[in-house]
Amino acid sequence: MPENNFPKLHNATWPGIVGKGSDSEPIIPFETLLEKTAAAEVDGVKFDGVDIDLFDAHFSINSSDDDIKKLADQVSGYNLNIGSLVAPIWPPEGGSAAGSAAERKQFVEQVRKAARIGRKLRELGVRPSGVVRIDSATGVGDWMKNPAENTKLIAQTFREAADAAAEFGESLAAEGEICWGGMHSWKTMLDLLEQTDRKNVGFQADMAHSSLYLLGYNRPEDRILPENFDWSDRATLDEGFKKLTDALRPWTIDFHVAQNDGTVHGTGSHDKTGRHCLATDPNGKLDITHHAGFWLRDENGELTKRFRHICWDGCMFPNEVMYKQETWNNILAAMIKVRKAHGWYEA
Image 1 (tube, rainbow, N blue to C red):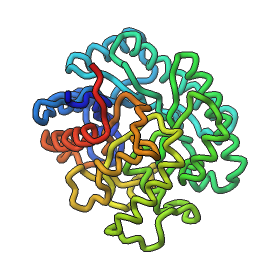
Image 2: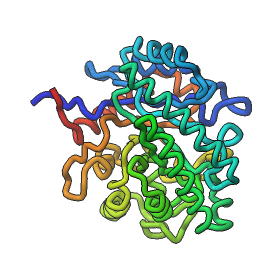
Image 3: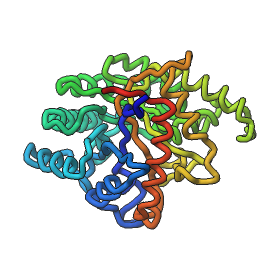
Image 4: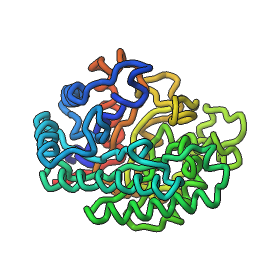
């Protein structure tokens, strides 16, 4: 049997920016992340591509067609493709999806710009798969001031953003990260997706972030695992994963492989979100290969094949760690195991 060659394996570039900057460690240049990604190799297998952020420090969402062509040439020069894009929908360039009319208009406009870039990259032949990632750009505390009305507003904004993205043939993936209002529990996420009700809007599962739904951080009444859960109880953990993934898998259109130590971490707008761990971290609570299968296979154990690539997401690692080539080789090794267990072959 030939080795599985799908889903394609992507690295993420935004960990070079998230948690970095003026009051922290220096931002890691886009070119450096491409170099590390392209250099990673395990038994002859390499990364197939990168998912990228449209942040000024790496690539501006206001870029011209010539700039987009340069980006395509830059990435393909490393024998990599581009996959999913992160739209910078947060203030001040964007605005809260539950905010004023002006803020929500800014949100939609940022999505429109990201979708335009996405289509251009497809036309250039460097982006065979991927979505545009969004969140509510709304804090949990702000959402809780009026949950019903705020979810209604976010859904309205998401519908308008979906219509804008559809003009360019793009789909939007709402990130399963517990720091965003209206998206901070699996039940609020389901409610938002159902109210949005657009064919080109789905869910982005991240193994580190979305696993925190199990513990009910930021919304204890929606926790799935029991209080004072013992992570060594793998049967109960798997039962919880099944409940979570059975609910959200039908909506899932983008997937991040990651590890988590069962705690929350973050700064600023990313407060109380799932702490990413290295693939080899002994404190990691997930069996990466095993638990990826809950997202990549349906309730009957059959492959969903909903997405053509998967991505590693690991934010807020120290620069010292991210500059080590060994880090990326270990991450690639973990992703290869996921593909061997839950992938498929296409000639």
